[in-house]
Image 1 (cartoon, rainbow, N blue to C red):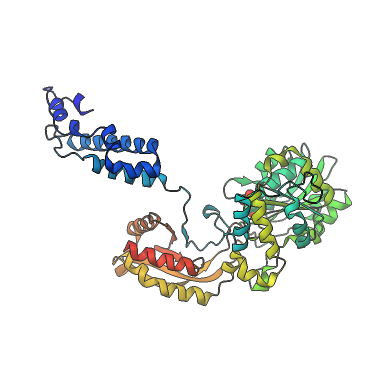
Image 2 (image 1 turned 90 degrees about the vertical axis):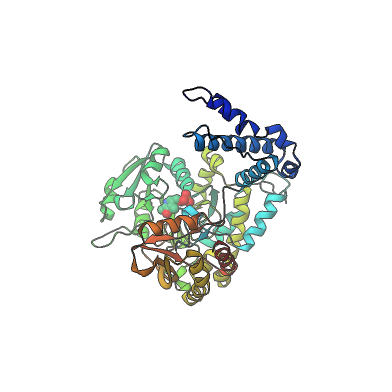
Length: 489
Ligand SMILES: *Cc1c(COP(=O)(O)O)cnc(C)c1O
């Protein structure tokens, strides 16, 4: 590259060629140098070759850039084989690092969709490892020796826990809604209140799903008020379903009226139609028993007359990403025969983890300890406060003197659309510019720096302060967090 660089006189390129750049070791020489041997053992020859090429190109480009304005000052010092190998090692380490990395979720949102939602309990992890590394009877009936049904892994448990007749599992709740609508309402009408046409983050919108399923959305009522008579007037020969969607990420308050499920399902049944509910988060146990706000349970929906209920596996349920459909046997059977069920079915890892999590619900008294999501949601505020006081000194040093770090009360939220307006009292670290200065750009740079740590720290900036809610920093993570702060100081 440098050999072809010429100035107006046409001699500088030649000089630089003879000078610095030409003395760079060749790819082959680096590859056969002793320093490259351990790299080849670890990463393989193909990767190391690529790393050396990339390293040499990057070095040459940088040298040309640096000397572009004064071309006769070519670099005299070029890296030798060992130095290039060492640079290649850095490149290889960076390139081999996993893209999916553990982070510290200090956002204050326990079920954070962008951070992977629910953390699996220990019991589920054990089942997962087995299902990953050993053959399992996923679709094999051990008593008959014949082909089985993968839903059988969890269907019985789901029925037991919800009071439903039947259950099936797909990839996520969006898939569950899609399957339900495709299977029961293709080319027909689905009546939904205008107050429930929700959009969930990540582009899940009821009207769009409806269209993808080939169903016609029949909106009734207004944003804030929908009456029984609105639904009734919309029912005709084209109607397939009456549907309720849980308002998972907003609340309509003030002058409002919604038709509750018992009334809606009675109306549907009087017209021979099914009433279906997209419960969103849904939960299998009443959270109020642990002092949390009440979130509608799946059993309540079934008891209120819902013919099918769909909900997520990785929201309040605390399990793996999955979409669950429970309800009437004949309707579930119909969905299981639909070709989309095959396309959307859950994998064995999901089913293994889900089974383990559902089993925990059989002993609700142990849930706050064993179900990670519930443990985080019910963590005593005093425990979060002492945790904040313990980690503050190390974090203060890592943040640096330009920042003031204080331990303050804050409010966590459940997230993923569960109980959007309820807040849980929590504690955390609040970082402001020292000396009462505006945080502004310095704060943004700090936030960026924390994101670049080996295990990135994810907080949130609000009111000119960086807030790190420590609700999700449990014991083992606390130690890791402090260690990292010390290393980053
Ligand atoms: C979260 C949610 C969904 C989407 O569920 P996923 O499991 O993320 O696919 C659908 N409907 C409602 C009401 C929700 O809250």
